[in-house]
Image 1 (cartoon, one colour):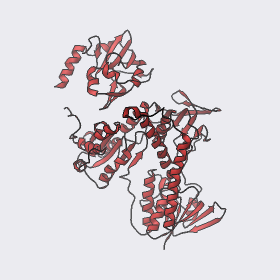
Image 2: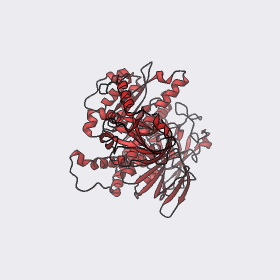
Image 3: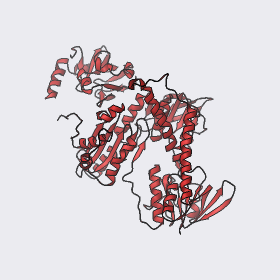
Length: 472
Length: 128
């Protein structure tokens, strides 16, 4: 029986552990914090637990329009919200522990570091200093909290998302540095709770890695809700006062806020874990270098998740974990990043898979093709969907990008209610290499939001039923 | 339907010039084509703009459309009432639905825009 030792029990490490056990390996997992990692304890899950409350609060604010009688105005109780969030997290963490015990996976509660390519030294919480020797190692140490000289985190005025999730206080003014996924999610959360939110983003638009049309849509939605958006500028100076923080921007403006949330600059947890003792190579950003089997330059030492610096997504880490242990246990599986769906849990939500319009255009040009004729785009708005109208949730857009010649899907982007769930139809279509016509011709149940996918696919060839005839 | 005291841009904005102050908005045709307007994003006061540039967006339940400035200058004032009541642009596009006042750099730019009669002829030609 092969013995695999896994360093880190986030969404990469714990999934790798279970898959390895399913395939018959003996597994030891070393983790010095809660099982589930950042995702489960301080990221994906807790933020969704809080955002879902604000989403519901937003709906209750519209109660009168919907014919619901609510006495008094909508208010939030942060203590109850946080207690519920912690309970959700606790349930899921316990779930992992239960899974581990059913599969006979050993969990060492302590801090591990590599001594060589087959040995992890573990300083356990109970003071014991032990060694784990295994036939193969999987490094799944994740990424670290922002730690930039300009923003000294003190947990009071200058905070990270970890602290922002505890709602210890709901500031009246919050400045968020970084308009990426995390920045926009926290803008949605705190704006919903009544905080005056300002976002500062260096690049000219929010969500710079998303499709531009979707990023602009998000920007409009946040503006509608009263979020102050400062793009194309950056923070030049930060002064901590007794109860506030004064921030000077490069464009010359000053912002005073009660708290500053740093949503830029995550690093890789590749230091202090003994990589040099095992001879494992890291890249210029500190990311561990791996091949498509997730194996490092040292045979038998694998690395997965945020620390390898590919897509910093929990579900990518989980897939990498499965790929790593399956290879260790004699299967041949390669990691492929062409079809990676992602959800952004802003209000409204975003779902995306594949390339953005900008990436597709650049790709076409690099292939010597004219961008205008190489790609086709279809769109459909939520307002055209009977289901969306019935739900009273008509803000949203489906956008489909396809190759004009092959009719294959290149990217699909959705903003609106349930976007992150809806994206999986397109993900499956791309995974199976389906054409736009094949998805468009599939029967979609009525009345559903998924009809928007069909209409957007039809619109690629100008044949969406519920769109006015286009002139010209 | 098309006020004769205004000038019109091919992207369906109107302009009313008083001295160096130009008030702009979108035409009846534009609001009608957009349908129920739900949000208007206007530029910040003090922004320098040049004719033909995108300065904002109008979102309706059907679509999102760009607002172009027909004239060059500096944004002197924006209609903040539209923030809570964007639907005013549907009901009164040439009056309470005004969008911004621009201090123009070259009042002659307005002369180059269409008159009401020319704009109506332009709309008719577009329909064909």
